[in-house]
Image (spheres, chains in turn yellow, blue):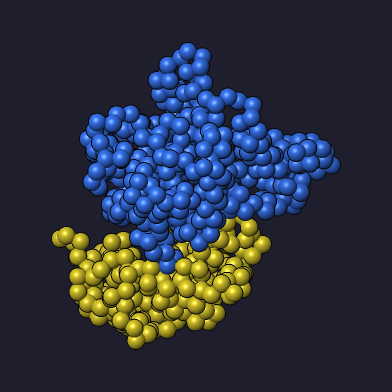
Length: 238
Length: 385
């Protein structure tokens, strides 16, 4: 599990995260909220890209605050980005293999680990293709394979289905649901697609203006009046 | 040579022809052209270093000619101080210059793009000023070893086994080939993959476990190591070292030529060396001022940026590959192209594919509408060439 203790992040006068406290359980946790709520900032704090002004992050009894971004990756935190970031100049195989080799994966295990990750996302047959030749959806799946290769402990997915058609979103949802069981990784999913969040996440944490406004079982959280108010506005609720 | 298949010509045949030309030319051409070819080989290594920095990592360095001067200065100074054997001198010069490169790379950890270009250009200008005042070591006293009463170029003594211009040309070619092998070993190994990730996105590279700081400094260190070795070779070449050959604008010309020839490609680096050193000699021989090259390079750069961003070698490989695929397709008329194909969409096995083009994102969707279409087995390394 991941414990967030009093996390606060400020960008100038803007408070992006405001004393966030939560304990994310093992499984898949949805991280939702309106635009600008602080979801990506929280992922950036978890992956070491943003240093919090105060507070700390403890994951599986390991204090992460002192670890830089690439050391967190080696520790086991993997992530995807809102804008897909598969490396266009490398093949599908090399895209996944380079994560394995730079996160401390043993060379003798690489072929199997990469093969397992590619099979998981359904890209085994395309492993020698250059990523620049793939469709947008497949590049998203390459990113997912990069996030699960080796032995990830935490997988952070930042809008992995953004811009995908419904069929590919469903395919992505199936893959995300299988991550915790197949890779034993705590998964955090940020997305605006509530159907995807509902189908993938056992629990959900809702941020609004950097504050936690709801946290619990996904179905209960999505039915919460405060959450609906944050998403839709007070007038619409009433 | 005839045994090379048509498909292999772009990647094997053309390089073999170029290499054979480099080996065959010395007995045929005169001493002047041997010296020109020696300089071209040296500048090809400098271009390769710049190609790695900018083409593979995305770090713009406009100070590589100044680094070449640092290599030349270091080689002469080390030789005068310790009289090292030539191979050891090459290595030591490379290591010292590589260390200087790492120091220069430190600002690159915070800067990128135009800002890094400006900083490195200013560095080149500063080094040029230092060189103008301090000169190259010519047997004087003190750390600088420069005696102002001894004018003229400074030439590094050659080893006995490479005393003649032809022998030194072979020696230069061998060392340059080793530098290319060193660069390719990095590009196709763990550093190359890390650099590709950094070039795409530093946050994504970090998230993949890449130590961005380390690999950026490694890129500067490697590029400057190779450039330092090139500086040592230049010091021993016929012209030797003169403070006037390392002006800051030379770095700008080098960047333009490398972009025009093919950034990040080894064969682009070879062509850049030829353009930098052989073209001026050709113009000189036909009575045209070599300054005219600046206009040619400028026009060529604009043409390249607009028409073929991969540079001349990138375009050549692409065109030869396309021609080869067309010929194969013509030889196998039984294979019927699917509806989504274009003229490039033929696999090595002769099977048609849909919309496969270099960087063809717009065509990058999965083949549809044709039951026969399959993606080609193109490795990233082939693509990267």
